[in-house]
Length: 241
Length: 342
Image (cartoon, rainbow over all chains, first blue to last red; front, side, top):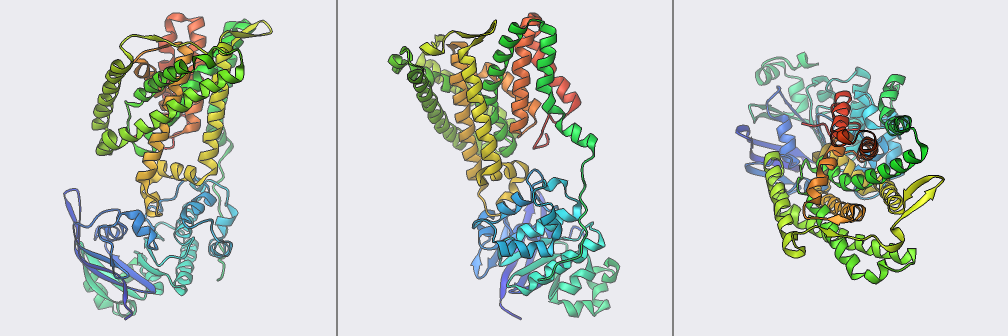
């Protein structure tokens, strides 16, 4: 297994009086797609938000490329090359598609070849370039949210349930985008409930339960072992398809 | 890198949705027309309309900063009136120092005096805004009750400091020589100073519209109003943005204070807190965080105040509150809310 790009070591996160992450230990290897699975409320979103510094770990260590980022502020974490696609997409409805992307390109105007690549992945973004993002459909908003995260080359992209509530045609588009992104140097940490998609794009997988990682290994191993799925998740992951 | 075969599906707004979206734009002309029909005399209507627009522009100048602070920082700043008052007193002091310029018969020299007074007022209120945000507001982010209490406290302290520096009495402030009196347009009287106020208000509105829509700072402010957390996740420090907007809002209040002081020709330590009632009404009518909504709201309040004062003097005070109630019954979040009220 390659050297981990991101490491979480015994991370605990409290939100008000709730103890959400209870010692998460996780390694995300450089390159490829690591998938984080788990039932609702297991702590997947909290894990991503804690990595991003949106909620701070109360104890434990988060390292990115060997550097301790546990106490860094969110903008400093983002400037290290970590992008975040939140579950609610987090697009700026009042801004146009163009303005959303311009804002995400922190090192200058978006490169034209990068834009062409994004338009290839998500054609509606070109069609509705000057439309307010709030007027897009749900699927188009998700495309914009992902495009915004990868408008510039990133080292790590955290993606939280990108296919939730989307039509099958849009899910295909999201999968292709993840697969293309995987071919670049970008590492992806993907939280996903759609096991069919997760197993097609994922290289490694970790399963969370009650704020802890209860399994880590190769995706192929979990996908091919229904007993393990039953044991880890309490039901066959095929039920999630 | 291959493309995908997704058919774009755009949720185009229906005609009724477009009409609903743009309806507030018709309010100012409709109110002006209703005023014309009610007043009956064209010259009187012109005089009142220019007065109303000038008043609206000055309220807009004071309210525009407040609505951005509301929207971006979720801060209820009752101390905003302090910057209006300080701006007026600083402007008065500078105009006093430039007495030779203000009594000069040259329009340009008079305008230069007003410009310098505005510059000084904006500079000092901007710096005070820096101190106010760091010392008073920053510790209470996220707590509306504490914000109300500490910013009210800040306002009271500022008023007392003004008493100490400039004394407790109302001070008369004279307009520069060439800004006194009126132009006669046909048979209508139009005060010169009110025209200047309209011009400054329009220039400011155009500049704010340009900055908010055409610059990256403006994009950041608009994005921050909507979702500050996501702005941070993109790599921008929202705290610096907060501070910059707070300082700009304070400086705009200072500008409004100079303009309002010259309009009323009397300044007191309480003038800021008195005008804040209208400022808050305008912010609420416009919708939290919306500069465009704030502009329309200010025009409505300015025109209605003047028409009502002429037609129904006893109802003038309640007319703006009635306007706010009607707007909120129609659009509970205001005309163009950027941030939904919690």
